[in-house]
Length: 347
Image (cartoon, rainbow, N blue to C red; front, side):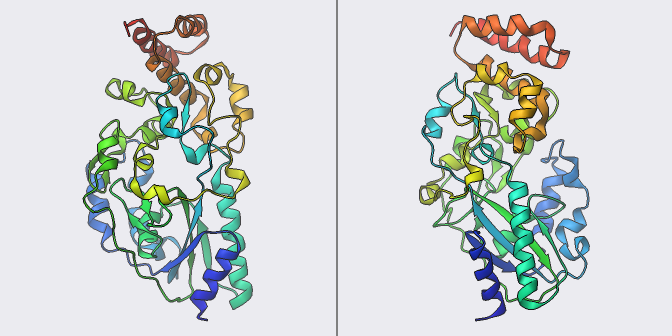
């Protein structure tokens, strides 16, 4: 067994569903990334426009890096309610499937660190650094090169036998390892993800304008939600999965065995009014250990207010929003004004 194969066996034994290895050459990404930044498709994510050279040249980020070990960790949970049905239920909140349970960052980092430690025990000390959706790393591009999957037209990584419901992680190492071959792209002529996007954020195959994306708007965007996108947000209070929900390859996705990814606080079926009723203290306590906590209470409340405005006319919603109006700051009041206006319309 080669060193690379032995390393993959170690990773699989630690609970990763797939391990792939690649080199550090990302030349084909240079033009694509420059175009994405030049069009301002990154929106308010200014960090995406910083350290560009480090993103495109891994050894600049971690000196002496020769190989990148990429991993896949599935997160899809078996649910009581079909997510597509949930999106049609305007009194319930929709939370992106990746955020229903505990924050994956800590779990992934801890497991990647253990992975690196076991590699070191097997082959001696090595220079390395672990990443998962952190630092200036083009993890999707690296995952494609490592054979984890191909990049779909929605920009997520896809695998023929596993779909796209998985997290990615990397170990940058100074070990010289055998590399894997990329997989063939199997999107073909399918345009399901492009057609279903509520805000037409997939501006062309393989290119997403984050400024139009509901995931960006409800998570990364911290100011007022633009008027043109509010109705399209529907009941999505954190993220959006539409492009993945309709992807034909996700019929092959497998459920995770990770207890930490199971839904917490009934986020898979919770009502909008129950979420709205949380105080800031409730939010901070309930969302401890959750990726959702990062957006803060203000953005959380903003998103819920918009979703309440999108619900079918309900006097109780109007009464609740009017009752609490004075206790909120101007930022939330601005969105409540819109929600009340929406609720006042004849449905």
